[in-house]
Length: 207
Length: 207
DNA sequence: ACTTTCAGTGTACAACTGTACGCTAGTTTA
DNA sequence: TAAACTAGCGTACAGTTGTACACTGAAAGT
Image (cartoon, rainbow over all chains, first blue to last red; front, side):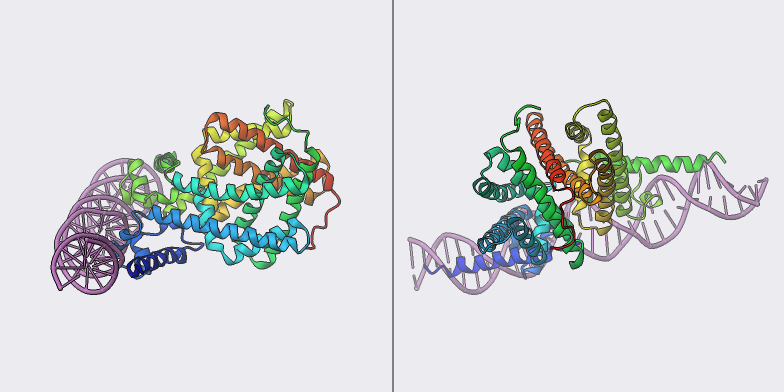
């Protein structure tokens, strides 16, 4: 019952996942990877791939889940730093920028598949971003005494701004990245100010 | 000098462009199109493609330019509607949503190539979005008497929010799209309020 | 009228793709 | 211990890809 077999299987499954992640880069998207390439990188015969995933799509969805996990890890890290005091916005942005610096390819995966050609991928990425947004929403609602609707709009806008800044950060050098961080922080402050000012004064259903 | 030859060439060049645009959809990205497919759709032999573009990349960059053109057209349309009176934010968002409804695939092209694997594509899309942003920036600066820096930050944030909403709009039905428009309008108001409140009170260079 | 240019064609090829199929050897189960 | 299972392999095949090359016929240049 030790499961020497299942254990080995899990191990090569990981090799496939890591092989795929390892091939991602600025110049290489997941959808441009072939089953054969991934199998080769993992040290497997092409046909062995099927013992673990029916499809490259199935592997891709696994990667998106993995990315979501990393994202939530990031969130926890930020929260921890916030507890030690300091501006919430500033710390969040800086933490996010650090995340991108060391997890660029995972972030790229999310960015790309968010607008990719597979609706399953798009849904999976949306889900991960929604988790992210809802956690922030809870925090805002509690910390700033906002209406639920206003808190959600603020959280949603903030995540959008930060993700967009993250995407921009991927293509620039460290010095510019600092400028970008400053700009992003100001934009988040705009949003926070506006949300606070308009809290309780919104017509939320009429166009 | 009538150029019967050049005229014909231009015509089939357009056929190639239109063939490529016509194949784009939610399920089909530009990078997934093959040279042969595009040539076939245009009614050409594969090798004739080279008479017009050296590469699929070159065709792609042409498409991005085309998309930018459409985007600026949209801007003009919005401005015209604003002159006839009404909330600037509301009209802008509604115009943008209409644009996406009738130009979904062009918008998808921009969205995808913005985070694609070709740095030339990314740069081209960035450029188009920057034009868009700068025009809005000018407008804001003049209409709301904002500092240049603040106006830019607001314009940039607004464009980010609207583009993101546009991306979301691509995957939902008409009823949900109206809700999304309302939410987006509120978010833009947050930003406008915040920018106005913080105008002249920003530390723009220090982290 | 003669030559040059060149948009478009058809053939050909090597590289690569996903995957069907049958096999092997080690693990698990009975 | 015997039988069943299965992760991984190798071969094979049909389909698609980009593009090199030699060609044609009509337009443009002289």
